[in-house]
Image (cartoon, rainbow, N blue to C red; front, side, top):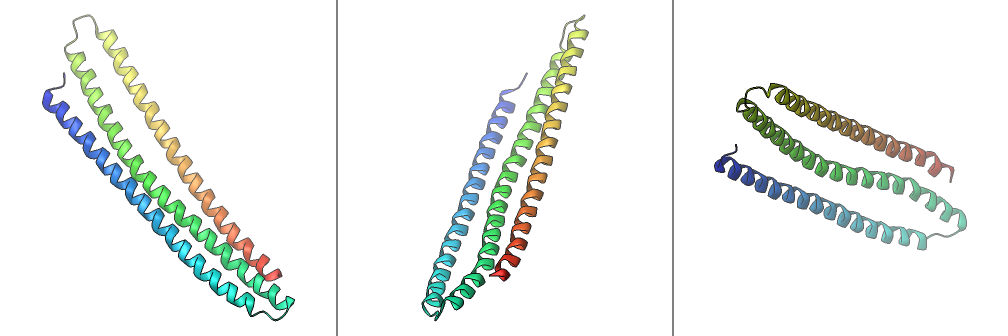
Amino acid sequence: MLTPEQILASHKANVETLFGLTNKAFEGVEKLVELNVGAAKAALNESATQTQAALSVKDAQELLALQASLFQPLAEKAAAYSRHLYEIASGTSAEFSKAFEGQAADAQKQFAQLVEGAAQNAPAGSETAVAVMKSAVAAANNAFESVQKAVKQATEMAEANFNAVASTATTAAKPAAKKR
């Protein structure tokens, strides 16, 4: 059985984890706000510069050349913004995953200790039931670890795909800008 001290320590650890995760969430939001404010400032400055350049154009051919020169930097900036946004999201998500894995590991350990304690205090003749219970706990732990591994692999694959798409988009923008 769990002692009052163990229960209190568990609650204290849960509250500390909650406040830690709340701080991480706010850090992620702060980074997102900084990114968006920076992007908005840059867009405003670029818009002013581009408007001035468009107003100084003397003919249609010069306007087309100006328009073509703006295309590639825009694609590169969009890709950089997307990459930065993804980094913020994946970094915050990683912190939450790390905390969740730690909490899950602690819970598994406590449950295993509870099962072990119950097994040691089980009446004679209940060895089969105890063995079945231990087997079920081990199977559940294995299933949980398999899910964690699958989620990590899916996350890594999504990140690789995102990077490949961003790279391809930036590379594709270069010839398109040159054609204009």
